[in-house]
Every structure is written in C-alpha cells, then in structure tokens.
Length: 166
Image (cartoon, rainbow, N blue to C red):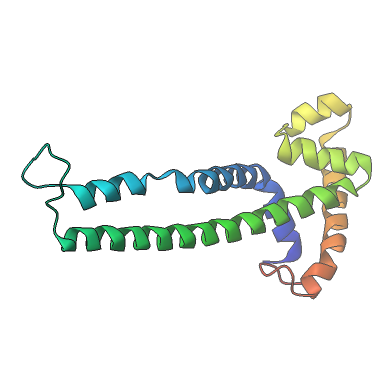
C-alpha cells in the first residue's frame, strides 16, 4: 500500500483501532481469571462411586490428566499473552504515532482531521461549525494528509512501516 493510502486507512480506521486496543487490554487483564485450579482439584480428587468421604478414588491417570491439562492451559495462556501483547503494542504504537503527528500539524488542518475522522463529524456539520465551504475543508484535509506523508516518509524509507511502499 502506498504511504498516502496507508495514512488515509489509519485515519479512516482510527476509532476501530481504539476499540481493538480496549478489547485487547480487557482480554489481557482477564486472561488469568480462568479458574483452572478448581477444575483440576475436582478431577484429581473426584470419585466415580459418589462417596461422601474425603478419600480419593481417582486413578493415577486422572491426576496425570489434570496435571497435563494444567500444563497445557499455562502454555496456551502464555501463547495468548504473547499474541495479545504483540498486537496491542503494534496498535498502541500506530495510534500514538498518528496522534503525535496530527498534533504537529497546523491547528486548522489537525482539527479538520480530528473532527472528520476521529469525532465523526460530517462535511456538512464541519461546514456549519467552521463557516467554510466543503471545498475548503477538503483542501485542508488534503494539505494535512500531504504533511503527514512527509512526516511518515522517513519511517517508510527506513522500513519501519511494513505495510507501506514509499
């Protein structure tokens, strides 16, 4: 994808990326809430005879299965944490970078990008709010995107934006 197309894609999907960040943070926080210990104890100390005595009628196989399950669950949790962390880090960097570069734009251009792409104002709403024509708003947007392309260019040239072609 060309750099300009990539920047427009980021702007158009900004809010979706924010939702994905929040979702990944939620999942990361709640990954350890699974109650595997209770289930493993139930498997380890269960009795197929329905005894009410606290003795265990479970075979060694049951305990082995429970321990194997716990090891597998820990491995899956670690893999999930790594995958979530990788995706979360990439999204946070992408959003933080875009926010930073937008903040370096001239105020009018930055405001047009934020209000249109992030706050979801329509062109008509922005026309009324700012008292300018749609053509003027689009010109500000295009100038802002051109500036963003210039800001992002060194990153693309250094290969730090893998989804972009210079």
